[in-house]
Amino acid sequence: MEPIVFLQSDVKDPYSLYEDRLWEGPIHKDPDKALWGIYGYEECKTLLSHPLTEIPALNPGNKDGLNEYAWLLQDHFVRISNPPRHEVARWAGIHLMTQMTRPSIPAILEGLMQRSGKHGEINWVEQVGKVLPVALMLKSFKFNAKDSEYIAENIASLTKIMSPEKTKEQVTEINTIATALFPIVRRHILETHPYPDMVEALSRGYDLDKDTAIAYVVSNLIGLFIQGYDACRGLLSPQQPQSGLADKKIMGKWVMETLRFDPPVHNTRRVFTGDISLRHKEIKKGDILFIILAAANRDTRKFDRPRLFNIERSNDDEHMTLGSGPHSCLAKYFAVQLTTETLACLFEKYRTVTLADANMEYEPLVNIRMPKKIIIDLK
Image 1: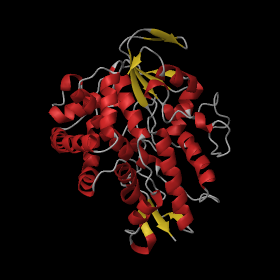
Image 2 (image 1 turned 45 degrees about the horizontal axis):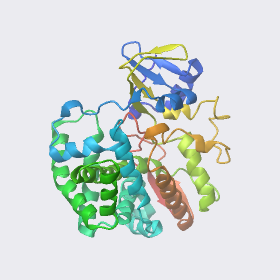
Image 3 (image 1 turned 120 degrees about the vertical axis):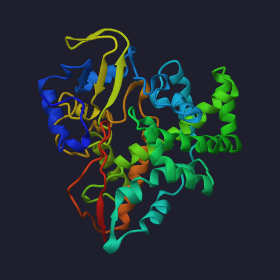
Image 4 (image 1 turned 135 degrees about the vertical axis):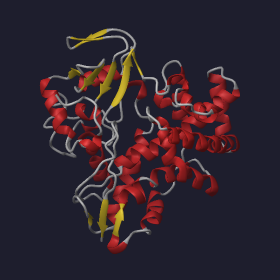
Protein backbone atom coordinates (compact mmCIF):
# COMPACT_ATOMS: atom_id res chain seq x y z
CA MET A 1 0.00 0.00 0.00
CA GLU A 2 1.33 3.43 -0.94
CA PRO A 3 1.76 5.79 2.05
CA ILE A 4 -1.00 8.25 2.88
CA VAL A 5 1.52 11.03 3.48
CA PHE A 6 4.24 11.70 0.90
CA LEU A 7 6.34 14.51 -0.54
CA GLN A 8 4.92 15.91 -3.77
CA SER A 9 8.45 15.88 -5.21
CA ASP A 10 8.51 12.07 -4.87
CA VAL A 11 5.33 11.32 -6.84
CA LYS A 12 4.95 11.95 -10.55
CA ASP A 13 1.17 11.56 -10.66
CA PRO A 14 -0.60 11.78 -7.28
CA TYR A 15 -4.01 11.80 -8.96
CA SER A 16 -3.72 8.15 -10.00
CA LEU A 17 -3.04 7.29 -6.38
CA TYR A 18 -6.02 9.35 -5.23
CA GLU A 19 -8.30 7.71 -7.78
CA ASP A 20 -7.19 4.23 -6.69
CA ARG A 21 -7.91 5.07 -3.07
CA LEU A 22 -11.31 6.52 -3.95
CA TRP A 23 -12.17 3.37 -5.85
CA GLU A 24 -11.31 1.32 -2.75
CA GLY A 25 -13.20 3.64 -0.40
CA PRO A 26 -13.36 7.26 0.79
CA ILE A 27 -11.51 6.69 4.10
CA HIS A 28 -8.28 4.78 4.79
CA LYS A 29 -6.22 4.30 7.95
CA ASP A 30 -2.47 4.09 8.11
CA PRO A 31 -1.89 0.64 9.66
CA ASP A 32 1.08 1.85 11.71
CA LYS A 33 -0.20 5.24 12.91
CA ALA A 34 -3.27 6.94 14.37
CA LEU A 35 -3.65 8.71 11.03
CA TRP A 36 -6.55 8.64 8.58
CA GLY A 37 -6.52 9.52 4.91
CA ILE A 38 -9.81 11.18 3.93
CA TYR A 39 -10.32 11.02 0.14
CA GLY A 40 -14.06 11.37 -0.51
CA TYR A 41 -15.71 14.71 -1.23
CA GLU A 42 -18.58 14.45 1.27
CA GLU A 43 -16.26 12.99 3.92
CA CYS A 44 -13.77 15.83 3.53
CA LYS A 45 -16.50 18.46 3.67
CA THR A 46 -18.11 16.85 6.73
CA LEU A 47 -14.89 16.63 8.71
CA LEU A 48 -13.69 20.14 7.85
CA SER A 49 -16.88 21.50 9.43
CA HIS A 50 -17.17 18.98 12.27
CA PRO A 51 -17.25 20.56 15.77
CA LEU A 52 -14.83 17.92 17.09
CA THR A 53 -12.04 18.69 14.59
CA GLU A 54 -9.26 21.15 15.35
CA ILE A 55 -6.03 22.35 13.76
CA PRO A 56 -3.14 20.27 15.19
CA ALA A 57 -0.74 22.25 17.37
CA LEU A 58 2.11 23.42 15.15
CA ASN A 59 4.58 24.29 17.89
CA PRO A 60 3.26 23.02 21.25
CA GLY A 61 4.85 24.78 24.19
CA ASN A 62 7.09 26.66 21.74
CA LYS A 63 9.28 23.59 21.35
CA ASP A 64 10.97 25.26 18.38
CA GLY A 65 12.37 28.06 20.52
CA LEU A 66 10.82 31.00 18.69
CA ASN A 67 11.61 34.37 20.20
CA GLU A 68 9.05 36.86 21.52
CA TYR A 69 8.17 38.37 18.14
CA ALA A 70 8.09 35.11 16.17
CA TRP A 71 5.98 33.41 18.84
CA LEU A 72 3.63 36.41 18.91
CA LEU A 73 3.10 35.99 15.17
CA GLN A 74 2.59 32.26 15.22
CA ASP A 75 0.30 32.41 18.23
CA HIS A 76 -2.15 34.75 16.47
CA PHE A 77 -2.29 33.36 12.90
CA VAL A 78 -5.87 32.56 11.86
CA ARG A 79 -4.68 29.61 9.74
CA ILE A 80 -3.57 27.59 12.78
CA SER A 81 -5.87 28.89 15.53
CA ASN A 82 -8.73 27.04 17.20
CA PRO A 83 -11.82 28.32 19.04
CA PRO A 84 -12.30 30.64 20.77
CA ARG A 85 -9.22 32.50 19.45
CA HIS A 86 -10.02 31.54 15.87
CA GLU A 87 -13.08 33.79 15.79
CA VAL A 88 -10.98 36.81 16.79
CA ALA A 89 -8.18 36.01 14.33
CA ARG A 90 -10.67 35.45 11.51
CA TRP A 91 -12.32 38.81 12.23
CA ALA A 92 -8.93 40.47 11.84
CA GLY A 93 -8.18 38.62 8.61
CA ILE A 94 -11.56 39.33 7.01
CA HIS A 95 -11.43 43.03 7.84
CA LEU A 96 -7.91 43.33 6.49
CA MET A 97 -9.04 41.78 3.20
CA THR A 98 -12.00 44.15 2.91
CA GLN A 99 -9.71 47.19 3.30
CA MET A 100 -7.35 46.25 0.46
CA THR A 101 -7.10 48.69 -2.42
CA ARG A 102 -6.82 47.37 -5.98
CA PRO A 103 -3.56 48.44 -7.66
CA SER A 104 -3.05 47.78 -11.37
CA ILE A 105 -1.98 44.17 -11.90
CA PRO A 106 -0.93 44.82 -15.54
CA ALA A 107 1.42 47.59 -14.39
CA ILE A 108 3.08 45.33 -11.80
CA LEU A 109 3.30 42.43 -14.26
CA GLU A 110 4.81 44.65 -16.94
CA GLY A 111 7.58 45.71 -14.57
CA LEU A 112 8.39 42.11 -13.71
CA MET A 113 8.30 40.93 -17.32
CA GLN A 114 10.82 43.54 -18.43
CA ARG A 115 13.50 41.47 -16.72
CA SER A 116 13.03 38.57 -19.16
CA GLY A 117 16.04 36.55 -20.27
CA LYS A 118 17.39 35.72 -23.70
CA HIS A 119 14.98 34.99 -26.56
CA GLY A 120 11.99 35.92 -24.40
CA GLU A 121 12.45 33.00 -22.01
CA ILE A 122 11.72 33.60 -18.35
CA ASN A 123 11.48 31.51 -15.20
CA TRP A 124 7.86 32.33 -14.42
CA VAL A 125 8.03 31.00 -10.85
CA GLU A 126 11.05 33.12 -9.86
CA GLN A 127 10.20 36.23 -11.84
CA VAL A 128 6.45 36.43 -11.35
CA GLY A 129 4.98 33.70 -9.12
CA LYS A 130 7.17 34.43 -6.10
CA VAL A 131 7.00 38.20 -6.52
CA LEU A 132 3.69 39.47 -7.88
CA PRO A 133 1.24 38.39 -5.12
CA VAL A 134 3.30 39.93 -2.32
CA ALA A 135 4.09 43.04 -4.38
CA LEU A 136 0.37 43.51 -5.04
CA MET A 137 -0.47 43.11 -1.34
CA LEU A 138 2.21 45.58 -0.27
CA LYS A 139 0.77 48.19 -2.64
CA SER A 140 -2.77 47.31 -1.56
CA PHE A 141 -1.93 47.93 2.10
CA LYS A 142 0.03 51.12 1.26
CA PHE A 143 3.48 50.14 2.52
CA ASN A 144 6.31 52.51 1.62
CA ALA A 145 9.16 51.49 -0.69
CA LYS A 146 11.71 50.80 2.05
CA ASP A 147 9.42 48.57 4.12
CA SER A 148 8.11 46.85 0.99
CA GLU A 149 11.64 45.99 -0.06
CA TYR A 150 12.44 44.42 3.32
CA ILE A 151 9.24 42.36 3.37
CA ALA A 152 9.64 41.19 -0.23
CA GLU A 153 13.24 40.13 0.37
CA ASN A 154 12.52 38.18 3.55
CA ILE A 155 9.05 36.69 3.15
CA ALA A 156 10.38 33.45 1.61
CA SER A 157 12.45 32.71 4.72
CA LEU A 158 9.62 33.70 7.06
CA THR A 159 7.27 31.14 5.48
CA LYS A 160 9.26 28.47 7.35
CA ILE A 161 7.41 29.61 10.48
CA MET A 162 4.50 27.48 9.20
CA SER A 163 6.62 24.32 8.97
CA PRO A 164 6.11 21.68 11.70
CA GLU A 165 9.77 20.70 11.41
CA LYS A 166 12.37 23.48 11.51
CA THR A 167 16.15 23.35 11.63
CA LYS A 168 18.06 25.46 14.17
CA GLU A 169 19.28 27.63 11.31
CA GLN A 170 15.70 28.23 10.12
CA VAL A 171 14.56 29.15 13.65
CA THR A 172 17.42 31.64 13.97
CA GLU A 173 16.48 33.21 10.64
CA ILE A 174 12.77 33.32 11.52
CA ASN A 175 13.57 35.01 14.85
CA THR A 176 15.79 37.61 13.18
CA ILE A 177 13.20 38.50 10.53
CA ALA A 178 10.30 38.57 13.00
CA THR A 179 12.22 40.89 15.33
CA ALA A 180 12.56 43.42 12.51
CA LEU A 181 9.26 42.80 10.72
CA PHE A 182 6.76 42.87 13.58
CA PRO A 183 7.63 46.48 14.59
CA ILE A 184 7.60 47.58 10.92
CA VAL A 185 4.07 46.27 10.38
CA ARG A 186 2.90 47.42 13.82
CA ARG A 187 4.03 50.97 13.09
CA HIS A 188 2.35 50.87 9.68
CA ILE A 189 -0.94 49.67 11.17
CA LEU A 190 -0.96 52.39 13.82
CA GLU A 191 -0.07 55.18 11.39
CA THR A 192 -2.16 54.29 8.32
CA HIS A 193 -5.88 54.89 7.87
CA PRO A 194 -8.18 52.96 8.44
CA TYR A 195 -6.22 50.41 10.49
CA PRO A 196 -6.23 52.26 13.84
CA ASP A 197 -10.04 52.22 13.67
CA MET A 198 -9.90 48.49 12.91
CA VAL A 199 -7.75 47.87 15.98
CA GLU A 200 -10.15 49.89 18.11
CA ALA A 201 -13.19 47.98 16.77
CA LEU A 202 -11.52 44.63 17.40
CA SER A 203 -10.56 45.67 20.91
CA ARG A 204 -14.11 46.78 21.75
CA GLY A 205 -15.86 43.91 20.01
CA TYR A 206 -13.94 41.16 21.79
CA ASP A 207 -13.00 42.99 25.01
CA LEU A 208 -9.27 42.88 24.26
CA ASP A 209 -6.54 45.18 25.48
CA LYS A 210 -5.01 47.30 22.73
CA ASP A 211 -1.72 45.37 22.49
CA THR A 212 -3.56 42.07 22.00
CA ALA A 213 -5.82 43.59 19.32
CA ILE A 214 -2.75 44.98 17.56
CA ALA A 215 -1.06 41.57 17.70
CA TYR A 216 -4.03 39.96 15.93
CA VAL A 217 -4.08 42.56 13.15
CA VAL A 218 -0.31 42.66 12.64
CA SER A 219 0.09 38.87 12.71
CA ASN A 220 -2.69 38.23 10.23
CA LEU A 221 -1.46 40.89 7.84
CA ILE A 222 1.93 39.17 7.85
CA GLY A 223 0.04 35.89 7.51
CA LEU A 224 -1.55 37.19 4.30
CA PHE A 225 1.93 37.93 2.91
CA ILE A 226 2.98 34.36 3.73
CA GLN A 227 -0.13 32.93 2.04
CA GLY A 228 0.44 35.15 -0.98
CA TYR A 229 3.98 33.88 -1.37
CA ASP A 230 3.10 30.22 -0.74
CA ALA A 231 -0.31 29.45 -2.21
CA CYS A 232 -0.75 32.16 -4.86
CA ARG A 233 2.50 31.32 -6.63
CA GLY A 234 1.29 27.74 -6.91
CA LEU A 235 -1.90 28.89 -8.62
CA LEU A 236 0.03 31.27 -10.88
CA SER A 237 1.33 28.40 -13.01
CA PRO A 238 0.33 28.82 -16.66
CA GLN A 239 -0.08 25.71 -18.78
CA GLN A 240 -0.12 25.55 -22.56
CA PRO A 241 -2.35 28.42 -23.80
CA GLN A 242 -5.77 27.78 -25.21
CA SER A 243 -7.89 29.88 -27.52
CA GLY A 244 -9.58 32.80 -25.81
CA LEU A 245 -7.54 32.93 -22.60
CA ALA A 246 -6.98 36.68 -22.97
CA ASP A 247 -10.71 37.06 -22.29
CA LYS A 248 -11.12 37.49 -18.51
CA LYS A 249 -14.46 35.69 -18.47
CA ILE A 250 -12.97 32.62 -20.15
CA MET A 251 -9.82 32.84 -18.05
CA GLY A 252 -11.95 33.01 -14.90
CA LYS A 253 -13.58 29.70 -15.84
CA TRP A 254 -10.15 28.25 -16.66
CA VAL A 255 -8.83 29.25 -13.21
CA MET A 256 -11.81 27.73 -11.40
CA GLU A 257 -11.49 24.44 -13.27
CA THR A 258 -7.73 24.42 -12.64
CA LEU A 259 -8.42 24.79 -8.93
CA ARG A 260 -10.47 21.61 -9.14
CA PHE A 261 -8.44 19.67 -11.69
CA ASP A 262 -4.82 20.46 -10.75
CA PRO A 263 -4.73 22.63 -7.62
CA PRO A 264 -1.68 23.93 -5.75
CA VAL A 265 -3.00 22.86 -2.32
CA HIS A 266 -3.49 19.10 -2.05
CA ASN A 267 -4.22 18.44 1.62
CA THR A 268 -4.68 19.79 5.12
CA ARG A 269 -4.63 18.26 8.59
CA ARG A 270 -7.02 18.14 11.50
CA VAL A 271 -6.96 16.37 14.87
CA PHE A 272 -10.07 14.81 16.41
CA THR A 273 -10.99 15.91 19.92
CA GLY A 274 -13.53 13.12 20.47
CA ASP A 275 -14.69 9.76 19.08
CA ILE A 276 -16.81 9.40 15.95
CA SER A 277 -18.02 6.70 13.59
CA LEU A 278 -17.89 7.66 9.91
CA ARG A 279 -18.52 5.28 7.01
CA HIS A 280 -18.28 2.40 9.51
CA LYS A 281 -14.81 3.58 10.56
CA GLU A 282 -14.10 4.33 14.22
CA ILE A 283 -12.07 7.53 14.53
CA LYS A 284 -10.74 8.08 18.06
CA LYS A 285 -9.86 11.16 20.07
CA GLY A 286 -6.36 12.32 19.17
CA ASP A 287 -6.34 10.68 15.74
CA ILE A 288 -4.89 12.81 12.93
CA LEU A 289 -7.05 13.39 9.85
CA PHE A 290 -5.13 13.87 6.60
CA ILE A 291 -7.83 15.53 4.50
CA ILE A 292 -6.89 15.21 0.84
CA LEU A 293 -8.65 18.04 -0.96
CA ALA A 294 -7.18 17.21 -4.37
CA ALA A 295 -8.65 13.71 -4.09
CA ALA A 296 -12.08 15.09 -3.17
CA ASN A 297 -11.91 17.16 -6.38
CA ARG A 298 -11.66 13.91 -8.36
CA ASP A 299 -14.55 12.14 -6.60
CA THR A 300 -16.95 10.77 -9.24
CA ARG A 301 -19.79 10.97 -6.72
CA LYS A 302 -19.49 14.77 -6.93
CA PHE A 303 -17.92 15.59 -10.31
CA ASP A 304 -18.93 14.01 -13.58
CA ARG A 305 -15.91 12.62 -15.50
CA PRO A 306 -13.41 14.27 -13.09
CA ARG A 307 -10.39 13.34 -15.25
CA LEU A 308 -11.69 15.69 -17.95
CA PHE A 309 -10.57 19.33 -17.83
CA ASN A 310 -13.78 21.19 -18.69
CA ILE A 311 -14.12 24.94 -18.11
CA GLU A 312 -17.88 24.69 -18.73
CA ARG A 313 -18.36 22.31 -15.81
CA SER A 314 -21.51 23.39 -13.97
CA ASN A 315 -20.21 22.81 -10.42
CA ASP A 316 -16.48 23.50 -10.59
CA ASP A 317 -16.95 26.31 -8.03
CA GLU A 318 -17.69 23.56 -5.49
CA HIS A 319 -14.08 22.33 -5.50
CA MET A 320 -12.44 21.76 -2.11
CA THR A 321 -9.07 23.35 -2.88
CA LEU A 322 -9.67 26.50 -0.83
CA GLY A 323 -11.16 24.58 2.06
CA SER A 324 -14.58 24.45 3.68
CA GLY A 325 -16.01 25.25 7.06
CA PRO A 326 -14.52 27.65 9.64
CA HIS A 327 -11.02 27.53 8.16
CA SER A 328 -11.95 28.13 4.52
CA CYS A 329 -9.43 30.40 2.83
CA LEU A 330 -9.92 34.07 3.67
CA ALA A 331 -8.18 35.17 0.48
CA LYS A 332 -10.01 32.89 -1.95
CA TYR A 333 -11.63 35.70 -3.96
CA PHE A 334 -8.38 37.66 -3.99
CA ALA A 335 -6.44 34.60 -5.20
CA VAL A 336 -8.89 33.84 -8.01
CA GLN A 337 -9.05 37.48 -9.14
CA LEU A 338 -5.26 37.86 -8.98
CA THR A 339 -4.68 34.75 -11.06
CA THR A 340 -7.40 35.56 -13.58
CA GLU A 341 -6.19 39.09 -14.24
CA THR A 342 -2.50 38.17 -14.31
CA LEU A 343 -2.83 35.29 -16.76
CA ALA A 344 -5.36 37.10 -18.94
CA CYS A 345 -2.91 39.99 -19.16
CA LEU A 346 -0.08 37.59 -20.06
CA PHE A 347 -2.02 35.96 -22.90
CA GLU A 348 -3.26 39.30 -24.16
CA LYS A 349 0.23 40.79 -24.37
CA TYR A 350 2.03 37.81 -25.94
CA ARG A 351 0.87 36.13 -29.13
CA THR A 352 2.50 32.83 -28.17
CA VAL A 353 3.20 31.48 -24.69
CA THR A 354 4.83 28.04 -24.63
CA LEU A 355 6.53 25.86 -22.05
CA ALA A 356 10.24 25.66 -22.83
CA ASP A 357 10.62 22.62 -20.58
CA ALA A 358 7.66 20.32 -19.98
CA ASN A 359 9.52 18.18 -17.41
CA MET A 360 8.14 19.61 -14.20
CA GLU A 361 9.92 19.19 -10.87
CA TYR A 362 8.15 19.96 -7.61
CA GLU A 363 9.22 21.32 -4.26
CA PRO A 364 9.67 18.71 -1.48
CA LEU A 365 6.43 19.69 0.27
CA VAL A 366 3.62 17.54 1.63
CA ASN A 367 0.59 19.82 1.32
CA ILE A 368 1.37 21.99 -1.72
CA ARG A 369 2.25 20.80 -5.21
CA MET A 370 4.56 23.64 -6.14
CA PRO A 371 6.68 23.66 -9.32
CA LYS A 372 10.33 24.52 -8.66
CA LYS A 373 10.47 26.40 -11.93
CA ILE A 374 8.41 27.02 -15.04
CA ILE A 375 10.42 28.17 -18.05
CA ILE A 376 8.14 29.80 -20.60
CA ASP A 377 8.93 31.28 -23.99
CA LEU A 378 7.15 34.49 -24.89
CA LYS A 379 6.59 35.83 -28.40
